[in-house]
Image 1 (cartoon, rainbow, N blue to C red):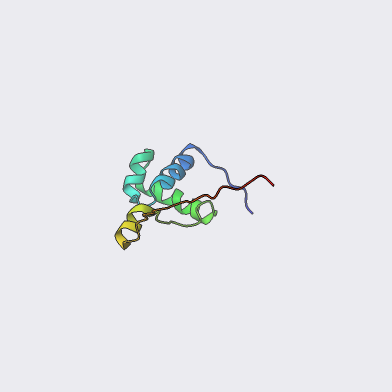
Image 2: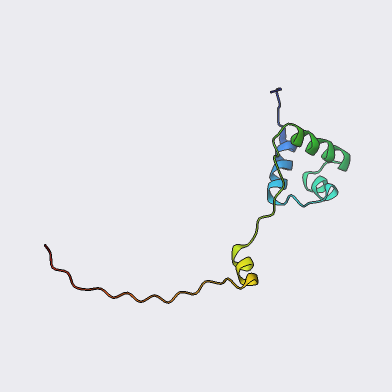
Length: 86
């Protein structure tokens, strides 16, 4: 594997992408205070180096369950029988 160093801008890019990978290149560039072409080149380099593996959506399990009608309601009754110490 080739040597790869990260500078402050790379770390900021990774942090921003970790928070919201759906940001446009222009929005991402504005957040890390670089030009859009520089941002695009750096993000491509991070992908090519394998530092970014994939882009995923994080679902809200409660909202998905409610939307699908799979909310959880439980009514539990417990009956204990007395047991002697044997």
